[in-house]
Image (cartoon, rainbow, N blue to C red; front, side):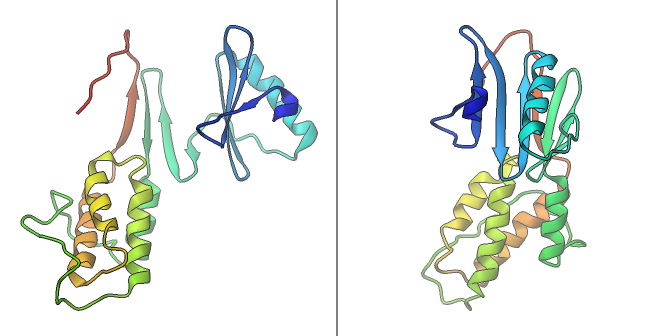
Length: 193
């Protein structure tokens, strides 16, 4: 990438940027053997593909629809990023494809603690489920708090903690179509919560 004039990002090691004096020409995200390229001018991507094909055997999948476990739907007005397929895999992995859905990702009134007398569960399975849910927070901002809370009990998990993770899964099943939507706007307006 450096031979082609790209600079590696200091804050994100998988991101490479090619600039001219006054503008960004290409941005490339590299993840193992997947490349995601964006640009201002389409000709620059075509040139970049030719340069890369001289060095590597490559397959061009066209406009991005899937990248590192995320589905991408692009229109002229918006981009929607979701993890629909990943949710289905998690539900199958933990034997919950037909589970009943719930309206919130946390049980009302449930207090999680490390000092309980409840039966312990197999930590490896709990860690695996929390890890899957943590990866899901990439596009599911609505479960970040709950997953963060559940991750505090990786060292000590019991049936109450495991039940709480399954409630998050039941909620996610009922909200399969949720994701992050980026809409075109005439002006940039940042809204924080």
